[in-house]
Amino acid sequence: VMYTGFRLLGAALLAALLAVPARTDACAVALPPGVTVDVATESAIVIWDKETKTEHFIRRATFAPSHPGSTPVKDFGFLVPTPSVPELAEVPDAAFDELAKVTAPRTETRAAPTGGGGCACSKTASVAVGEAKVEVVAEKHVAGYDAKVLRAGDADALTAWLTDRGYEVRPALSQWLKPYLEKKWVVTAFKIGNGPAAAASEPIGSAAVRMSFTTDVPFFPYREPEDVRGAKTPRLLRVFCIGGQKMEGALEGGKAWPGRTVWAGKPGTAGWKGALEHLKVPGFQPTDATWLTEFEDRSSPRPGDSELEFRPAGNEVPVERPPH
Image 1: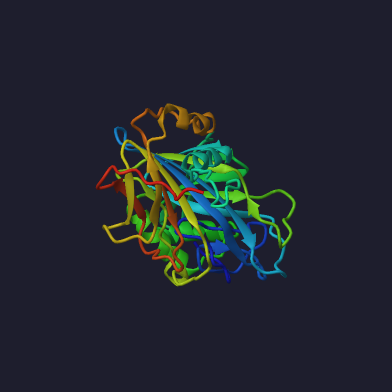
Image 2: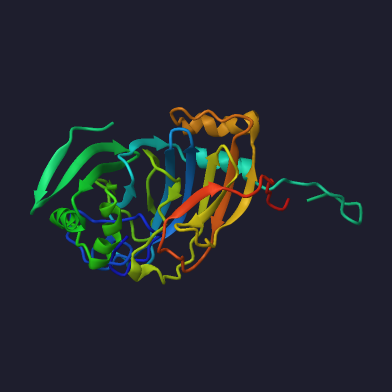
């Protein structure tokens, strides 16, 4: 993602102020001069259907202006590349809370040594840009965002399209986009806006969004533009991965990922009940054999030169957090 003086989360984000042309720098973000933003929280749910090769990717994040004197932010958004055109839907934040209950540490009560107590998409449109085209494959208002799914002939065409709409695109963003467009991926541009400007100290965010798409390998968009990979802003990434097997994470090409498994097991029918009330993913009906694997990545800086892929783990040993 990219932006001026901006250190943002990773791989698939573009923040943008559309009402005012903005200078941009690092992390695919575009905001007006004087605005700096950090990721306050970030978590995701990845549901993998091996039979249909469908990933349901649900992401929740809040962003906070990192400068006490920052300009109030009115419009904000991000870009997410996917191998195929995604279906978009809102997901209540409660889905994350219910999964966190499943993976929370057990509470043990122990006697103290003294005997004391224990402790909808719209029509397609095309915009010509030179010899290449940017096609708006779908548009939808979802979870407080205005979303546009874009298919572009190349990075230059998409860069021109974004520039014409108020995004001041740096070379780093064009380079970040290039491999996705060469693979014929689509890019979904989300924008929060049209409301009152948030104060410089207020977090910025919206409801979680589900993106359902076909892919050969389930993944989290982890890759970052080259000029922001050295950012050392502390940030926690939490990913809940759901599928028919216990999963492990690795960077594209099998490279080591600094994230770790903090919980893995089969919640069972009773354990899934709370989350199912909120997820409402088409075709997703977990059984007693369905695994939930939770990962945490606290690395700073992140090795954001590859996507984060998920694959079956080499064992089926459950993992739990130490008890309280």
